[in-house]
Length: 478
Image 1 (cartoon, rainbow, N blue to C red):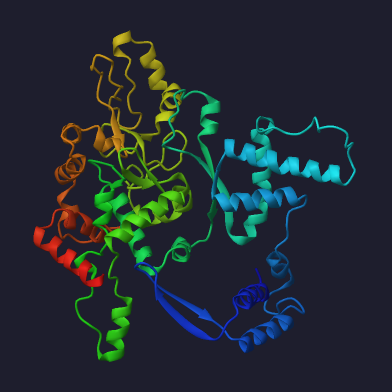
Image 2 (image 1 turned 90 degrees about the horizontal axis):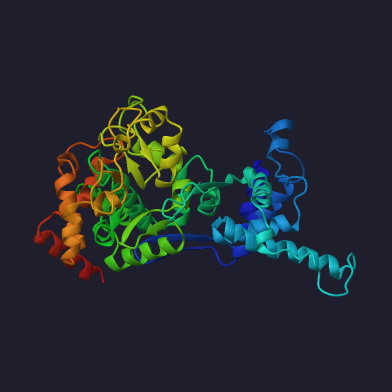
């Protein structure tokens, strides 16, 4: 977009705001938000400047750059496409079933408009009125493709992935996989942090960063890849680790005031719980029946590049263990599914991809020729035997290894605490046993922020005195 268009957009936004020139500052449930409102004279100056700039192409750009900077809608983009894109933006995500109802309503409105204009016979009901089941996957892809072309100049895109938490009883059914597919409107900005900063005020944004660090660093190790937190663990992330808090004030009164304003005081526990509920409603977090929070499909699509750049080591060997992994079958990010028995092996599979993956492996074909009791596929990377589901009599040919919340809920420790009605204690005890000392000690930070994300676990295993100090600080803020 040329500079003249950007100036015009900023001017229009300011013109819609109106009001006197002032800076307002207020506390949004734990986050400091600042807004600028310009006066009418500044708005007039912007309009005059826009008129001068809009008189011709930008002189600093050549003809080719000016031509590329103009936002042009794709050919054939009509009111039905506009209605679909507006509805998509309102929802944020769509499944194929939701799109069927949406597109049927949009296309039927177009037919009604044709009737009003007299282009069709008006006697009796229209026999060609579309039902949701009449909308095919190709119809949806056509509308999605048109929306992608319209959004591309604005650094937005529509991408799809399979919902990891949808229960698909028939894993080999193509219809079941289509119904579990999620299309999401995401930002393709090269700086994902800037997009997050638009969505959250500073303190809540800092909490979101701590939450991501806990999901993909603290609770994601070769021994246990949980990548989820309970509400109790999330509440312990309300404040930054003490090592991250400034210990020395800045020189001078002005410097001290600036340092105090920029200091992350954290959030109240009630604000954290409310924020978690809001993130679930907006589709950024998924909350399971067992009460575990993890990133939703929409969040994984939106933050894919950010997660890989932040938590993975680009200089590591190709077969080295990384925190952000992809399914070996569908190549999508995976946070819930199955893993190899070897802790450092990188083979991961979604539940719905497992059957098709082994079907395509030569090792699985060789195992199929073996006697019935010896049919066990092996990992094609490390040759370790792959587990199987337990039979009805409780016996199994090798234990399955999970990632996600099942890495916790499938353990004997968690099940024992669950029977006692103390499931949260089971999670804490399990993490205390399995997490490496490096994640709970004061070791140096590694790529992915392990040093900074160790704070949540330190708080989880801290003394009662530290917890009482935090409660006193909460009461002081209230």
